[in-house]
Length: 180
Ligand SMILES: Cc1cc2nc3c(=O)[nH]c(=O)nc-3n(C[C@H](O)[C@H](O)[C@H](O)COP(=O)(O)O)c2cc1C
Image (cartoon, rainbow, N blue to C red; front, side, top):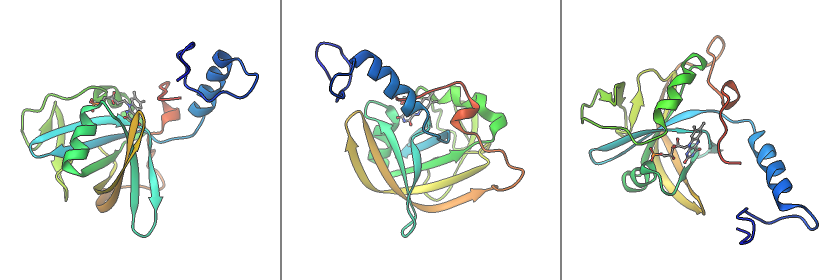
């Protein structure tokens, strides 16, 4: 971070840090991405968190990476429990992502998490009943990346519908941004 501006470098020679920061943010926001709900569990603690930094990173084994803010409750749960679920939503359900931006109250009911119907699949990480498709993963590698940690998980179970006629929620279906 540049001490005098509070902005994150590096900056190209001769650039105005403020203008460059604005441009870089817009270009980063232009990266197409999905929009998911990440389920986590460690012992009897569970959470669901809105996340767009996710993607497949290997084919053999089947590995999926998610990037989680170091200070998030979810970070502690994925680190301790070494599992996560990645819930894929229908475009029509875009409004629910607003519900998962802070830690949830967990009554301990295995079928409900903060008013959302959930179930446990192979790993015990909560899978949303309203998810159109889901991946259940066991963490194989953790990569610290400054503000975030990338957790790389192997797909151990999955389900749901995809393909023609199923409209999957993507970041561009909302007016939201993250990171940049
Ligand atoms: C549209 C959107 C996308 C987000 N993407 C991510 C993400 O990829 N990684 C992340 O750590 N937090 C992301 N967040 C922030 C988290 O949803 C959450 O607010 C924060 O990390 C706290 O999580 P916690 O409930 O586990 O403490 C996103 C938030 C929004 C609104």
